[in-house]
Length: 321
Image (cartoon, rainbow, N blue to C red; front, side, top):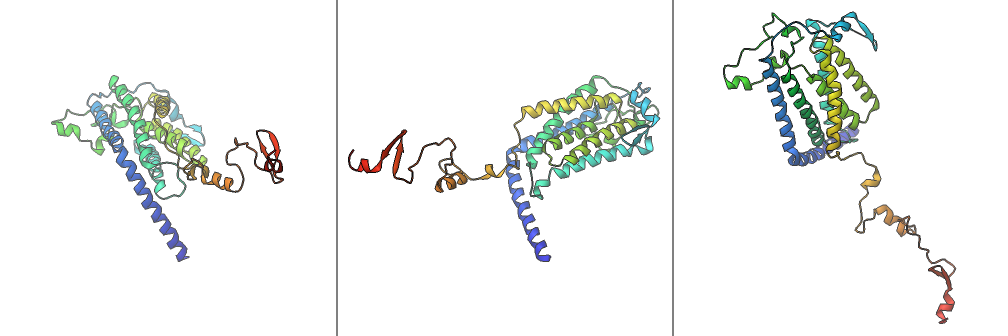
């Protein structure tokens, strides 16, 4: 038993080291795209914090989600209602689960033998999706500021408005408190951007059908929970659903496709100098044609030579006839 564990551990370590070398080579070629995507995440955070300075609390807008969810609608065996300020963590817990699950899955090539993606190339693609959607989001919530439906964005809350920053450094620093208690960045939901991009990416590159179905179900549940927690209006969720899907579909067709690592053995066979695979050369050595187009007839065993459709006896040719 210990011998088996040592052998498997040795294989796992070799696989891990080999994957690190591969991913480092890809990182050396694509680090600019990753860095640009990460910088834009910071810029998106600054934009969300900046709109908070313009936010003015007001009465809640009329919303069909707010009207329906407190009535405890039974949907897929879940009873949704207004979560309240003390239960708002439920929607954040679901989002955190989706985020961490995708993040860990993206590094599975370092451990698992069956793999379909390269981690660096996958994150380049994901960050491109996120950045494009967030550009549209920034333009949208700066165009019109709606009164925030969240509890800390309502009238009477000390977090509803932000005083102007005293210096430029204070304006450029993003604190976790500012992320949790932001207001004004409503249309459309940033939580839904991340969740939909992650689920669509796994839908394309994941290998387990059941997990794909569960992931879509979790995103649907998260949509209801966000509205039930009064973190967004229903329009923020609806706009996110069709905008993110359209943007990801468009960009996915424009970007070059990721190399598939789960190819069949036929594509893994090494080529010889003449362009044939070793399997085709093996067939030729055994008398079988490696090319199905090659229909030339070969010398039969009875001594006759067939050429250009004419039959000539070998003895006659030897006698000069």
